[in-house]
Image (tube, rainbow, N blue to C red):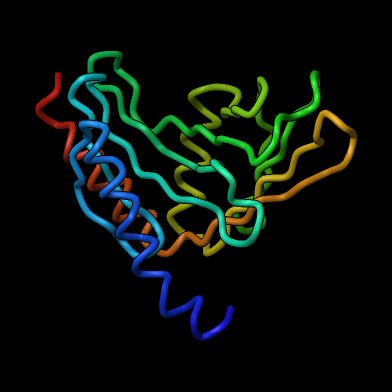
Length: 164
């Protein structure tokens, strides 16, 4: 990354909370490459980040807590492009690999047990990679830096403690 890119990175991180506040979401903090928010209208809190590099588009990775639904630590990936129908994007966290379920540009862990395993892996890794096959046939990969992910996930969990 260039010096200018490094200098602008904190400004980009600050843009996430500003955009969220315009949507009625409350910022719970920015933690390096990740941010945490509370959305009382949907009774959820989440940690979120954008991928690094040029394929950022509207892609993101998030880990949400929905207290009223009894859901904690649910992974959601917004892919940079729509996944091919019937394909299974893969997520790599450190040395661990997980298959995801996809519909269009959205992907999730297969079940709650997979969510829990992914969340545990995120806490000790430095990079998250999501690879998918595009509708046109080519493969694409998004990479997420995990600096701050554990703190952002914890902030989201604490931020929703009273939304039961």
